[in-house]
Amino acid sequence: MKTRLTEMLGIKYPIICGGMMRLAYPPLCAAISNAGGLGNLTSAMYKNKAELKAAIAEVRTLTDKPFIVNVTLLPAMSVGPEQYRGYFETCAEEKVPAMEIGGVPLNRYEDGRYFKLLKDAGVKLFHKVGSVKHGKGAAKAGYDGVIAAGVEEGGHPLNENVATTVLTPRMVEEVDVPVITAGGMANGRSLAAALCLGAEGILMATRFINTYECQVHAKVHEELIHRQENETVLYGNSIGLQGRALINDSIRKVMEIEARGGGLQEVLPHISGQYGDHIWKEGKMDTGLIPVGQSIGLIHDTLTCKELLDRMVKEANEILAQNLKRF
Ligand SMILES: Cc1cc2nc3c(=O)[nH]c(=O)nc-3n(C[C@H](O)[C@H](O)[C@H](O)COP(=O)(O)O)c2cc1C
Image (cartoon, rainbow, N blue to C red; front, side, top):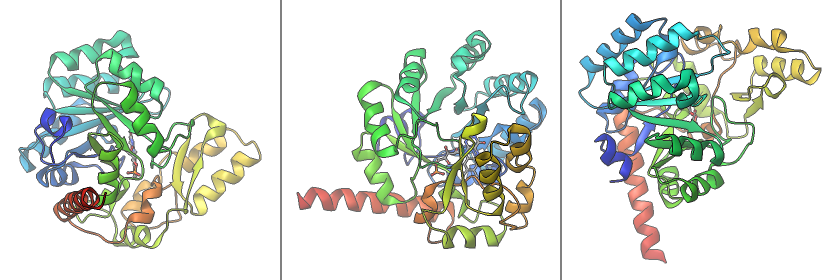
């Protein structure tokens, strides 16, 4: 399965893992890369340059394959300018193969100095966006690829709420760099569909939670298998940062606060991620916000990363071949 993405990065399969706060640690990152995809190391989990450097070194002891580092550039939130500087300088010094930038365009942050630093270091830069306008801006600025993230996605879909099935082909119409589809991708059918829509690869996150290398409590795996595609909800519009999360007691509380006009200070404790370890490590599924996508409806089992990726690509190839025969 060759696309401009696999050629650019020297990977076997056009499948990228998206940033996952509290989950995309070196073992999962390396397992995905060793399985032929592009594993993700999420920088916000590391306090400073030294910690991120150590995490990159750990990934490199576990795999000799390419991987991608996520930086979510939301300067008004918890990560400060010093920390961002540390992340960007480290990625340039370490010449990491690729970076996934979410939030503010890196070419417009700090006069574009880190964008240039990373480009000069040969790092492939991908901007994750939810609109064609932002995708065009990224392509024009010189990003190597655009990740088109539809409203189905976990994390923070843009509040324009355009679905993956429309956002992907629209993006393909407007930019000449490779487009990677995100949001709702979970199996071989999704991969085949994304390629038919014109994407050169997919990015998925929620599906990777149900792999054995994602170090979460067994109850998390059971819960995601059990829950369906209609059991997530969009929240956060009243505070200017939309998100999608699994319906549980915590998100019901957030919805109730937002509905009666409670402000940021009241909402923040429930969405800040302070209960992350209770959820992921202890399996307490009602103690905080769980940022998964609608793709939970497509999760029916827990596999190793290799089993998952091999199965997805086999299924996608079979579906594409069957349809060629059919029509
Ligand atoms: C548990 C979890 C944590 C996430 N954390 C981040 C993050 O820190 N930064 C980011 O840019 N995206 C984050 N995302 C969004 C993903 O990178 C990706 O864009 C999205 O989940 C893709 O949709 P899918 O979940 O349907 O595959 C997270 C997603 C999940 C499921």
